[in-house]
Length: 216
Image 1: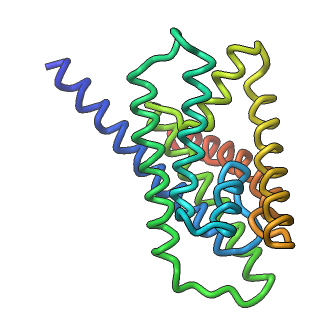
Image 2 (image 1 turned 90 degrees about the vertical axis):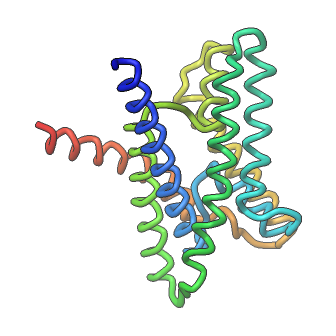
């Protein structure tokens, strides 16, 4: 009986994680709809999707995930856990397709002013933070970007937070270069990217505090 209950609990946690993925993808979709840039990790595939239509936004997001997973395998070698890599890959591709689906869901929304852009950007940050918070509550896996940061942290002996900040900066810088070179303007990364970088983590902390108050 205990084994059955534990399997049910694990399935529920994975279901919660996938729901979190979907909500997070909606947050990214709202951010891109705002046209002020998106979260650092999403900014690179989004910028590439504006330049090349070979893949969709979600497709480029999937490709970035494959690169991040490959880096983990190269760095960790024998310490790499095959099951964890398989789960990461499945969830990452699910996230990519969910992002495309979320963009499709809100395709009819039109943004007419800078005030509306800011509003949708803030909505995107709150929704993304809520999705991330739900993923944390599921607690069953990490997406490739975060897992890659963890692997680099372990191998280099550097703090995870510092590695994350470094790669966030790298994603934003590459996005800016791609947009300026191929589009002649900043598109995939703008002030919204900075807002997301500063706001999302703090909003996740706020959700944690609210949850602890309700629980107590």
